[in-house]
Image (cartoon, rainbow, N blue to C red; front, side):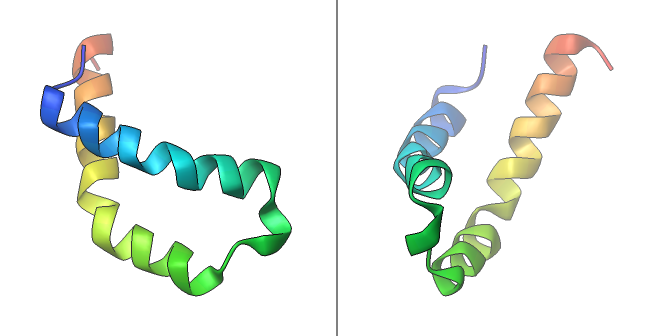
Length: 56
């Protein structure tokens, strides 16, 4: 359903998600900030693609 490029980018973020959810006490806020700054467009593209699938 998602483009292959976006799917690959999101897969790369899964490891960070697992740390954030299961070991949140060791999350480095500087790394969180860098991920958001670097991947904000990926999150926006994900939202756009999902909205297109849902026809919003």
